[in-house]
Picture 1 (tube, rainbow, N blue to C red):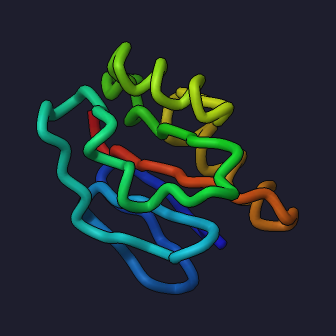
Picture 2 (cartoon, one colour):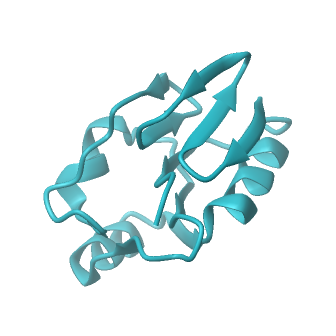
Length: 114
């Protein structure tokens, strides 16, 4: 469970993280997530954590919402029938916590700052 988010820090199950990260409902937390294009998420940035059962990809875009999915990623996810949700990180935290109480397979990428 994500216990707290504030600009630059996220606390998950009692552990504090200060760099961007991925959470997969199947494979857990993947800290120190870096993207090829900085604020743009490409297929290559998340494909290693997607599995055949993934139904949703959530992108916590940072506090003001600067991180976005590339058009190529949007097309790729649509082809795989995976829903993409992009929203500022505080809202994405709430959505992920709600998903943790379901059987949904999801991947969430969190940008912790801008």
